[in-house]
Amino acid sequence: MSLPSRCAERPASALGIGGALRPEVLRNPFQLVDLQSRRVEYLRLSVTDRCNYRCSYCMPAEGVDVVPRADLLDFAEMVALTRVFVQLGVRRVRLTGGEPLVRRGIVELVQALAAIPGVDDLAMTTNGHLLADLAEPLKRAGLQRLNVSIDTLDPQKFALVSRGGALQPVLDGIAAAKRAGFASIKLNAVTLKGLNDDALVPLCDFAAQEDLVLRLIEYMPIGVDAYWGPETWLPVAEARARVAEAYALEPDESGEIPGGGPARYWRGRHGVTGKTLRVGFISAVSEKFCTACNRVRLSPTGVLRECLSARGSLSLRDLLRSGASEEDLTAAIRDAMAGKVDGHQYDAAVATVESMSAIGG
Image 1: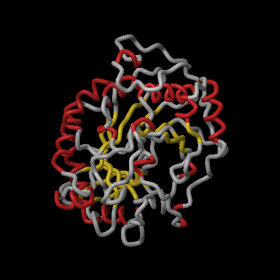
Image 2: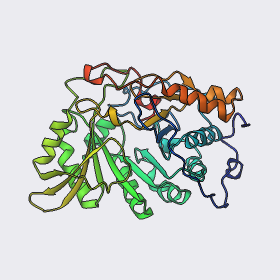
Image 3: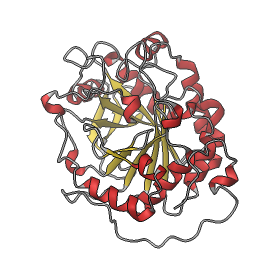
Image 4: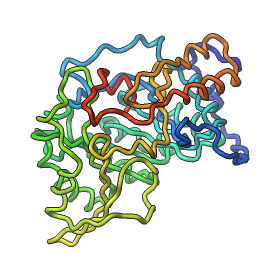
């Protein structure tokens, strides 16, 4: 496999983006399996470590050091590595960051990834700040689903949680995404004791009103500033109990919500208005879901992370830039999966001392 070392500034046609029809893909059995016999079908691809927010659960107020741009994967490298993962059975790709929408040329990257035969589901997680102008271009480029982070509907608390972010651009971005017609739009909120735990029911009301799925995410002990602790951590059971004060909840086992991620979904009906809600709870700490893990992460510098809680050691970027073939990359990825841990140790409060923006959320 021959690739130019840097081609982020090349025109879209040079990345294999064009009007040609995608060829039919022969569906092979999943080939990427870890030692616990968990099939890996989901790649979270971090496109940048930069972000325009400084969210309290992600990084310190002063921000974090970012890597030199030359050390980031370029678009051709991302496309090439995604092709290798697809050959290994990956069918779902999610773009993360940092904030993916601050990466210049993100629409062209989406178009290139969407054109890869075998990528059946292409999604993105974003803070939504730049989404209003980009929702329609992203949809046209082939992005299918969106997760938008919104931790509270109170503008002042939103600015506090995000350390300077603005709520209205995010709301405008959600509205633009709805107009663009994405197959699925989900709202993500990290639950923080004493900061936004009083925002959970209003977020549920907003999701019910807008006919969107809300996911409430238990704060994980990841970061470089010791912000995670008993003062900030809200167990998912408490979050569910707060929602249940306003909504009658019952487990949703319909399987109708796309994504297949770690959330456990519930249906809710408001006790007064009768509005219906679908809400997912993601609990990596108190109700961990490691036995069903089906994903790997690729950091913005091309390091493969077999588990969110463990630093990766395999640099696929370095292999690529040293001229590795697809066969070499395939073998390296398979070998790395042998080192995937059975599960994280967050229940023992063992923190990962890295910024989530550097890992790839």
